[in-house]
Image (tube, rainbow, N blue to C red):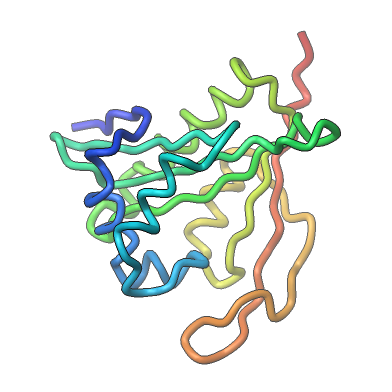
Length: 165
């Protein structure tokens, strides 16, 4: 059954927390293990320009993508994204469905020209996904984050929508 993409609702907090409580998910984000539910409740008070999408399969939330449109007047054409997919659903098109929905909204409804993200250089599956959607590596960020007891490198990637009216 294909994933249904929709805006997250407050009732989804426990499911979103459960996704990011999985070791392979939090290890590939800047999240820490053992986060309280209150951290995820902030998704609903993130402020202007934040879009919180979830992927649902047969009534279960299995992925989440947050997209923050920059509020600085000189960068309102830019959005930053981050996402996580439940371990048992990775590699099944959930990330693609979330990313496709976010980019469709960015391109066709929000007038976003540039979408940015940061990904650990060791996360080959995520990098391949982003490249399939037109993201390109713009920079390598040495010692970007601390993961499993050591500093790791990340890649700054971006996709620029060159389509004009």
